[in-house]
Length: 230
Image 1 (cartoon, one colour):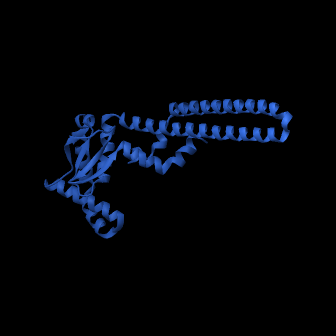
Image 2 (cartoon, rainbow, N blue to C red):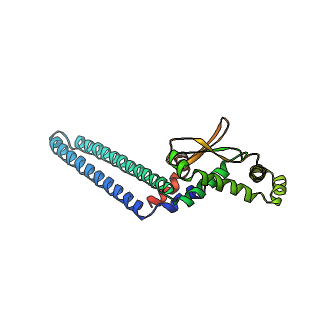
Image 3 (tube, rainbow, N blue to C red):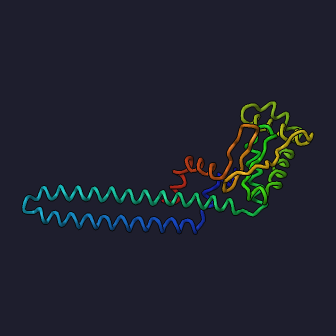
């Protein structure tokens, strides 16, 4: 899923501007908190001066420590908000692709997720109506195009993951060419922003954008954070 795996390339200037705005706001709040706690510390230190400078110092240190902890919490919350926004923008851009490019993306996702070449493609109601037939046509064309005569030999020899992928391609494409089976468009639709669900009987593979981006976020949080917060 090149369109999803290259998410960092889709975070553009407008997203970074929103990120900077959130960070600036967090810094202001953190500074205000420090100033507030410092003011309280000064007042208590002055009031406690008569009863002992050491007690006043300890209290000031406690207040300063509390201010630092609160500031860290504010910054963490701001960074989380930035990540939320980055992934929301990524999903929005994926869903806003031109129809042809969007159908290409869904077709590639379907082919990658297919195991037998006989699955049903389930889309959102909007995508079903708009690009459903195109997605199925492109996905089956990809399977057929990949079924060159030498692919069968490679599938038998390569073994492992490569052999599994080639075998899947050959199986799906052969079924398509024989007219016995192919990826089909389900009459059912699902609630999702974009992407698809691939279904073979009771077995489903969830390739909805929401699901894929959630998984991607778990895998790429550190990398994306390094881009947003250098």
